Amino acid sequence: MLVAAADDGSGGGWLRPVDEAGAPAGAPERVPDLAAAVRRWEAAHRPRWLWEATNLIYPRLLAAGVRVGRCHDVTLVEALLLGYAGRWGEPRSVAAILARRDGRPVPRDPPPPPPCPPNQQQQGSLFETVAPVREDPTGEIVTAYLDQQARIAATAHPGRFRLLVAAESAGALLAAEMGHDGLPWRTDVHDAVLTELLGPRSPMGGLPRRLAELAAEIATALDSPGLRPDSPAELRRAFARAGINLPDTRAWTLRGVDHPAVPLVLEFKERYRIFTAHGWAWQEAWVHHGRFRPEYVPGGVVSGRWATRGGGALQIPKAVRRAVVADDGWRLVVADAGQLEPRILAAVSGDPRLQAAAGTGDLYAALAAESFAGDRAAAKLALLGAMYGQTGGAALPAIAVLRQRYPIAWRYVEQAARTGEAGGLVRSWLGRTCPPSATLDPTQPPVRSEAARARGRFTRNFVIQATAAEWALTLLAVLRARLAAYAATLVFFQHDEVLVHAPESEVPLVMAAVREAAAEAGRLLFGATPVRFPLEVTAVRCYADARATDRLPEGTGTPG
DNA sequence: AGTTTCATATGG
DNA sequence: CTCGCCATATGAAACT
Image 1 (tube, rainbow, N blue to C red):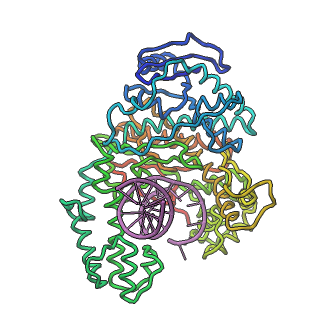
Image 2: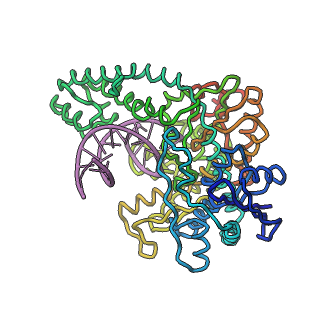
């Protein structure tokens, strides 16, 4: 059963129960308290909620303590369907869907809100900026839903597309929940990390002591009083005065320069970065009551990966992860999908030799043993180079070996690249479609240009990265459903890594649930396949203690 | 003064 | 690992 739901902008709303065909399955209701009504329906029937946009309606339900199991997010699904039809970027609201269907002028979507740190939010601002709704919109939502169902049925693989739709909608629920719950964050530990790396904070808002000392040492070493090492232009001029002409001041460039100031500059850069991006100012804006609450944006990246709005949640530096600490009596279950993209390539291409390697715990090692004389690093570089469209550098011989030894996998990415170079569209396994090229015209003869080659690299990588993203999204959806029975909650998701905050007593159950979710995601996407999607799962007090590797020790002994 | 682009870092 | 892919965020520099 489905229940279409809409809020009226002031706490109340409308509900309309319907069946899969859109026929009434109960009386439409005008409710004075939408959250309370949703809570009653969820407890009694666990329907699939049908609404225009999870990111608009669900945060208010969460604030009222209401959670739901499943939904269909019309706006996110419309983005998928528009992309599938090659109409990327057109308006996605219910009103836009109906207008397109009826041949009326299509209204524009409202602009997304700007990034807003939670500690600067004004209470009630959301309610004031949204015009109150006076008419029941649930009938139109149902109509839009039925229109979408028809278009989904007309895709090349409707079953796959339905899985994508379900996963995308579940992701939207989870994104709102994680933004609401927040990531456990110890401000005292964060302070200690900052003080250790940067020195005591300057009371006047200037550089902290250790950074200021480093800047002074750099100025002395370059005989440039007052030099600000955070200014690339000043730094280049100072090095030029010392007889060293730099093309830029990147860390990698500096590492090749023999001068006493270089190690100081490198140290300054590393620490200055943490000071500006994840220092005290960031903490004051984004962390409160022991939780970091970023705003996740499902589908915010063209490949289907999530983005975040403000807070830099997907770029937390390794050093700062020490501040992510489980509550007393709780643990963080950290699960990381190792070697995900090459495993995806094996699954989608059907290359039997690559699939054999992807059936082991360490794909790169198996590949190395099979085709690279045991050189694991070469095997890894070859695969990454093939998936990214690398055309230069030291990995070229290894890429040539890959091309010859794994021709089916090679042809898969080559085909995607050719399509892109010609201005065509490519799709992920479940049917997410890449945006069209801004410059290439598929109706014209192919051109050979740097733009065409860049487009080829993009589409080549898209088919892999987008499928990897939907595997991860499917895992999340499955795991979220399994964790509903536990006190444990998902608190963080970063492309191929998830964090679950769990009471100690639930840790074994949660670790098993994560592994099962990974296996289930593989089955849901690819059915019976020899490719495995192993997870490295650890339970830790502190995020920084979860070691990151690209190797997955399996079984009882070490290989070789 | 306000806005846009560049340079450089972080993450996968 | 400069590479080849996808991002966000900051401050400086360069503009309107």
